[in-house]
Image 1 (cartoon, rainbow, N blue to C red):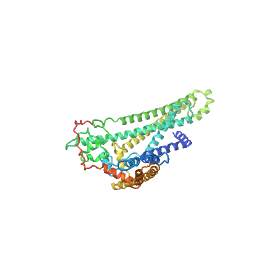
Image 2 (cartoon, one colour; image 1 turned 90 degrees about the horizontal axis):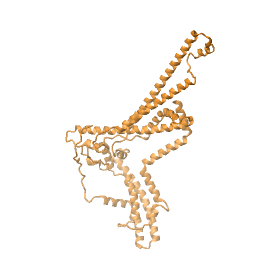
Image 3 (cartoon, rainbow, N blue to C red; image 1 turned 90 degrees about the vertical axis):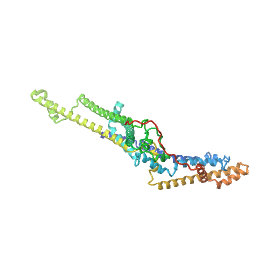
Image 4 (cartoon, rainbow, N blue to C red; image 1 turned 120 degrees about the vertical axis):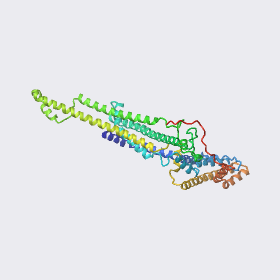
Length: 454
């Protein structure tokens, strides 16, 4: 095993630039995924700022006015930037809603598995599976050299690690969700103050989390979980699949290792190689004269050699079998660790991850509001710069191409009158209802009763 691991490490060092490039690509991909809205915002700004083919340059040729005195091109720019403002800067009430959502689904304090956790778990499975995948590579590529078997073993270990890590993580998360459903059903069965049906409820939305503040705890929980039509835990298919795959790989690895050992023993016997023992020296001394000695002298020596060889082979077999059993147990233990991490991290709620993203970096509502104001001012400041640049391009285009005095006057007035802040203020006025409306009270729909099956 150590020899295989040493060869694998040597191969990795020999191809360090490929491994480094792959790791950097994965890190960059994750960074882009976590900051996707910022990447999109940056790309839009680049597209607007291009000198000849940029969007601002093309919009400057559109002199059509709107009903409220804006140029249509100005409104287009404001709407484009406002769409990113809405996605990147949430309502200040979202912090409290997110906290309530996580509390109702009983996932306060949970978080996704960190990148370091994924890497450590993947590394454990990869190293543990490297021993038997090296043996599998020999059978997968019969007659190949060790230089070819090592990358093949690494590729098989990579595949096994990816499958098992994600499979055990998914199984652990399934167990977490089933536990929440069982808990909701237990609260439902123990409710003696007007039990409500578990089924027939609409999904709870994060943006309107307050609508069921006065509802039953088990109804709040069920509304935020993905359940079957009877609101029961159902069969743990992911756990069954994970257990089957883990046991199959553990048993298969043990069988392959043992058969490889047996094959080596048989080849040694066929090749005439005998394992050394304490009687080998005497046997070599007597080998030349054995044929001339009487059997009463040679027979005890021959029997002693046979017993020594048998005992040595039995000891080697027991040692190898014990080693293979320990490796199989370690393999299963590593998978249990992966299952436990999946059970203790991640979310079962439909929008719990979104809620966690809102509150993960903030300790209070005030801290969240300060961050929202700072982010909002940052985006507004950037937008004002691009809007000012568009106004300048518009003024030049109108003066150069238009013969209408009204258009020239509007272009000059808009440079100081129309700003992105005014655009946002007008939108807020339009979004406000003419009369305040009360929040609709949440009432559970009357549906057929659910059976008390677990």
